[in-house]
Length: 264
Ligand SMILES: CC(=O)[C@@H](O)[C@H](O)COP(=O)(O)O
Ligand SMILES: NCC(=O)COP(=O)(O)O
Image (cartoon, rainbow, N blue to C red):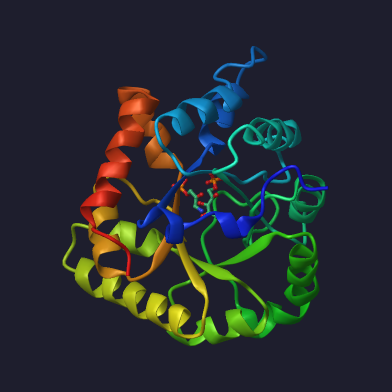
C-alpha cells in the first residue's frame, strides 16, 4: 500500500504556476563528510516545505556519494505528513532507481540515463536506442501508481518518442540554457527549449525542467518556455541557502517563478 497520496493530486493544475521541487542531494553531500548527521536532510526538507516549496527531489546515485538509501526512506516517512507535497526520485532505472520506486512508490520517478559513478547528469535519453529497455520499467511504475518523467535533451523530434514509450512527462535538461544565459546565445537557446516544450505538450506530455537553473535564469526561462509543470533545483538553491537560509532562499525562488506569470 502506497503511504503517499495519488500523483494526480499534485501539480501546476492546482497551483496555477510552475511547481518548485527542491533537490536535496547537496545537503547530503555535506552531511556525508562527517559522521555527525548534520546538516540533516529531513530537517532541510522540513524547512524548505515550511517555506513553501512544492516538492522534494533526490537522486540516490549508486555510489551513495550524497543521498543514501536511508535518506530516500526517511524522506518518504516525513512526506506522509505533507500530503500536498510531491516526492520525486531521480535515477537510472537500469541501475538502482527501481528498487526505490518499488519500496517507496514516490509520486514521480524521473528516469535519467546516467552511468554508475557519473560526475553529474549531462545528457538526456536516446529513445531510438533505449525505448525497448524502458517500456517495461515505465509500465511497472504505472502499475505502482508512479508517474514517469524522462530526462531529455531539448530535441522537439524526440518528444513523440517519449510519448510512444509511455512517459507521462519529460524533464528538459537545462544545462545548455544555464550556460548560455547572459551570453549572445541565450535567446536562441531558450527558443530551442520553447520549441521542445511545445512539441511535448502537443503530443500530450507534461513538461518538467532542471539542471543548473537558478534565481537569475529561472524567470526568463519560464516566461518563454510554455507549460512547465515543475522545476527541480538543487545545486544553486542549496548554495543560496548557505548564504541566505532556507526560508529566504525558497521565497526568492518562488518570487522568480511568480515573476514569470501563470503557466500556459
Ligand atoms: C537529473 C539531474 O538533472 C541532475 O541535475 C541531478 O539530480 C543532479 O545530480 P547531482 O546532484 O549528483 O549533480
Ligand atoms: N533534475 C534536476 C535537479 O534535480 C537539480 O539539478 P541541479 O539544480 O542540482 O543542477
